[in-house]
Amino acid sequence: MAKKDNNADQLITTILGGIEDMKGKEIKILDLRNIENTVCDYFIICEGTSNTHVNAIVGSIQKKVSKELKDHPWHVEGSDNAEWVLMDYVNVVVHVFQKHIREYYDIESLWGDAKTTAIKTSY
Image (cartoon, rainbow, N blue to C red; front, side):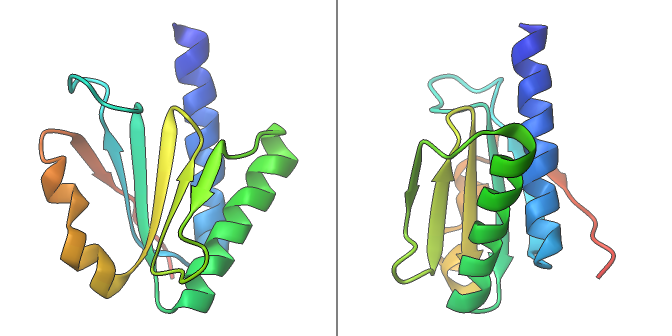
C-alpha cells in the first residue's frame, strides 16, 4: 500500500509542477480516499483564464509527467473546446477549468466530504 501512495504523491507533485509552470489558478487537491465508491483517490482542480491557457496547462502537465515519471494519462477529454479538460491518470484525475465553467459545475461542493487542500502559489 505504501508504494501506491508514494507513486500517487510523486504524480501529484509532478502534476502540480506542470500547473504552476503555466501559472494555473485556484489549485485544489481533493482527497477522496475516505469516501465510498469513488472512481479515483484524488482530484486535482485548477483553472485557466482562457481556452488557450487551459490547453497550455494540460500540455504542461502531460509533458512534465511524461518526462519525469514516464507516465501518460489513461484518458483526456475536453481539449476541443478547452472549457473543462479532464485528465485521467487512474488514481489521480485532473480537472482544468475555465473559471465560469468551474463555478457552474462546482465539483468541490459535489465532493464536499473530501479532505480539500488549497495550494498556495507565488504568482
